[in-house]
Length: 69
Length: 69
Image 1: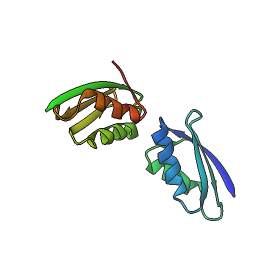
Image 2 (image 1 turned 135 degrees about the vertical axis):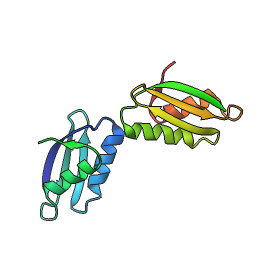
Image 3 (image 1 turned 45 degrees about the vertical axis):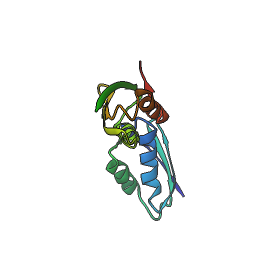
Image 4 (image 1 turned 60 degrees about the vertical axis):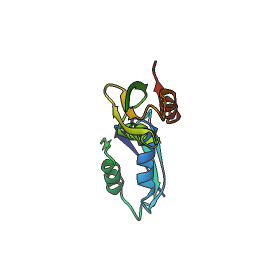
């Protein structure tokens, strides 16, 4: 299992937290996704043989948030 | 038709806007509900013979937001 922590701009409330977590968990390779609103971070545990960071970032951005480098 | 504009604290994003509007529109007496995030206001058009402001305020507060006096 691979763990990735991303910094994400624009997650302002519990609805945002839920939107990002649900979008990520729908990806089959993702085991868990957890947003920390105060830290502006999302931590994702996933099967690194079945998904890559670019795919995860794309899903977050499709929800309308900006993933920082 | 009665029109009521309330000031609501805590609506931070489009998810909040949608949550408040949807909760209000589910009330049968409510014809329309429109949130202005920048102004922190929600404007509700409703049948004043079938609902009262206290009921509308309660629904907004059940969604987790504070209605200011």
